[in-house]
Length: 344
Ligand code: 26A
Image 1: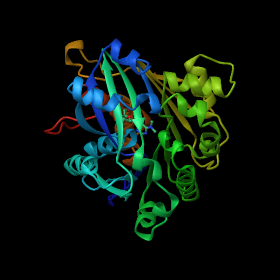
Image 2 (image 1 turned 30 degrees about the horizontal axis):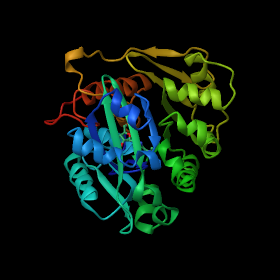
Image 3 (image 1 turned 60 degrees about the vertical axis):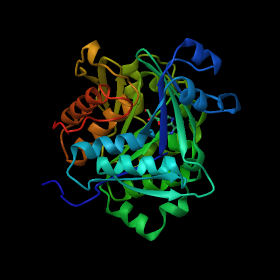
Image 4 (image 1 turned 120 degrees about the horizontal axis):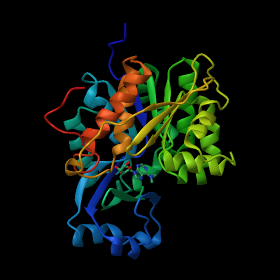
């Protein structure tokens, strides 16, 4: 029987507040943004946030990819199932995040840095695309010291499943490695999201150091392609990339690795270590009129998926939960889930 204890899922990444608005090509051009991308803000992007707020009627919405996933998993799981770690400041934006996670029933253990501002992500929506531009602020100061505090570490030891947002490779790889080793030594599953193409491109070394510890690796088509090209795999076929990911060397040999590649409205691809066949799982359809925006769709997928892993459900059901939750999330504004709650 599945365990019924609290906080079985522990997630780590970067808490952010999304500043989201519908934009246009002119806005993308002004800041040199691609329509569908995720980047770290540079000097040239400084004006974007104020521009979104002042000229595009931007909304403030709780974000941070793995925090969205954590809220999503908690949406499906019984109360007190999910805890999330990351760094915030001591400001208005942190207060908004606290309100949002409270409403979602998500427990957060933030490292609070009073000297830094809570991180923010400018989100420019154009049609079905979303461009994310992030200033990490306090999220960039998460550290091993916080993870190793006795009250936090006891949550780590208590957890049964770990979820790591790949964006955290830009922040604190040692914290990621601690969770990786903890998962493998206790034979607990660890789920890793590749998060964005720039992670396998520019954070290849820390990503690769963690690879032996991935029990589940999740990415979309662009992230999978970025992985293949930065690792000189010489393949572009998504099924082949899924297989390559699934068959990377593995530390905990008691679990076969599963690689999951989402592909927009195309079927999700699933490869299992040692298996030849790559399975396809069609997405849950949504009529165009019901689509709000795709910001957070992948995070919602991961949340639904993680909820299935936590409850010991089959791979097929876990994928289906992911697709179900993604479909709900893209009908909401930003990375959000409908209330009153729907049940899977
Ligand atoms: C380090 N970076 C760039 C990031 C992010 C991020 N979350 C963590 N770290 N860049 C964008 N996001 C979040 O991704 C969500 C959509 O998938 C945004 O906050 C948004 O909610």
